Image (cartoon, rainbow, N blue to C red; front, side, top):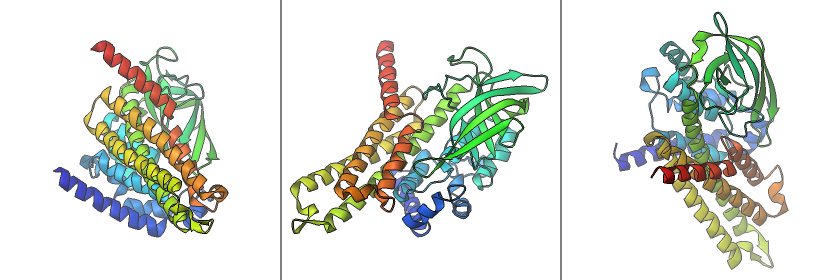
Amino acid sequence: MSDSELREQLLLLEDVARRFLGDCYTFDQRRLIIDRHPGYSLEQWRTMAELGWMKLPIGTSYDGLGCRAEFVAALFKEFGRSLCLNPYLISVGVASRILEWAASEPMKTNLLEGIGNGTEIVSCAFYEAQSRYELDNVLTTAVPTNDGYELNGAKVAILYGIAATQLLVLARTSGHSTDSDGLSLFLVPTRQRGVRLKHYSAHDGGRISLLSLNQVQISSQRLVGSADRALSCVQRAINYGSALACAEMAGIMETILELTLTHIKTRTQFGKTIGSFQAVQHRAVDMYMRCELANSMSSEAARAVEELEFPQQNLVVSAAKFEIGNAAVLNAEEGIQLHGAMGMMDEMPIGHCLKRIFSLNLMFGDPDHHLNSYRRLSLEQRVNW
């Protein structure tokens, strides 16, 4: 597909998504949805599945569309523009990638078709209280038994565990607590005996869960990929999810800019609209420039997860997550300040934009984590040269 054809297809997807979300996910509807169980609209989720959105990244061998990450990122940009919350990021954006890359054929066929039609939601239990975004810092254990494994441990920050039918659990099958090797992935049903989930409402309106595993017996057939070699696949999927989070933040930044421009063109002070003051105009221009930066870097991140291998992929994704995360926070703070005190009222969408940006910044590594990762990888490359 040529660049012009790709751009045409992306614009078509963006237009369909924007019209659908504009009709079905207004700000007032969003406030009602996030206050109710399970934190997203089941009816809209089914409609999204009927539109084929869940099938975008899934390969054609599993009844998917096999689209590149740029198409999924275009959808996430529209999610950001409308502040739409749902389990898509973790289930389709991360879990489906791991399953397609690493799972056995029977597991792929059953789960990917279910994820694609919206009936199966798979969340990921990777992080622990002590890990601080370090995926190899795992204390949860999976001890071999006669017919499988016994899992024990605890996980935090599980996105939409309240909606999940299955969990991808990262556990240690060998080695010490911070070894890169010795980590394995297991597909664990949420209703399995010994599995306990505690659900919370996040400050942006989404849902997160805590997981405890107490003598959970798992068949060896529920091992995803090779034993002791799960880390690279998980890291690759996290990069994919980070690129989608970057696209969502870019969409939120555009909404913030639109809300702010509308406000400064209508709000009067000293007999004039505040948008007529040069200092305010300069700040609006800075916000626009940061939006352009975010769009450019999110596009690069989406291309990187498709085309680049480690460590170049990690470098591009970490750079994008750091720059876009900081730019998004700054735009939201500028927009709220230009709105005045009412910007933080629950009735005003711009305050909700800031809360969602804070959540996205924390997902898959905050800006400080990605800055440190970028520095470390850059230094390693220089040493290898």
